[in-house]
Image (cartoon, rainbow, N blue to C red; front, side, top):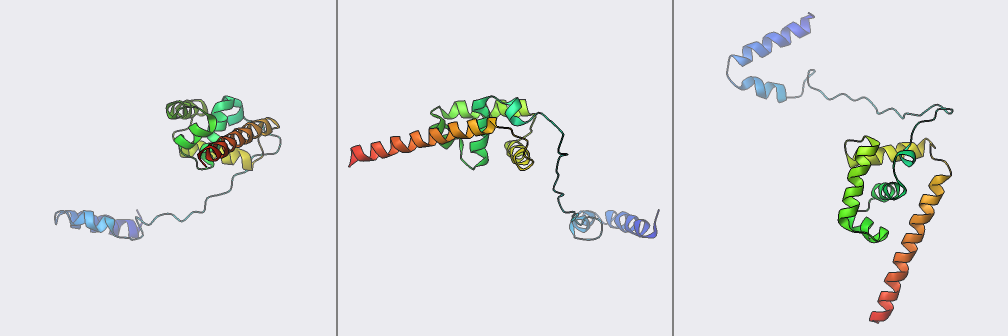
Length: 151
């Protein structure tokens, strides 16, 4: 054991004999519990590698739901845009987590962004985005026509 480790061990054992003071000493910032300041490396895939992307794993509707979630829409807004119910969107997102083997929605959106930044999507993504764009236009047209009826 190094001298620093031995000193810290003896300090903790002495403090533990004084009751709960050892808990307080561990909460203080020192060389033992300082958070690591390691920068997050920007990970890039090799150019010729081919992995299964979310576009491969998810259905078209699930992929669109994931895109909208990544853009910051909540489940009610996604349901309105895709003309479905809140419950269906929640169920779809739950299925997405299982299919994509992600633990949380944050992981799912991070994976979508990672795959997009590494240009892993082929021309099929243009079709998905075009469908979302037409759904947004339909929603705007419905909103405008509803506003004209009120006026």
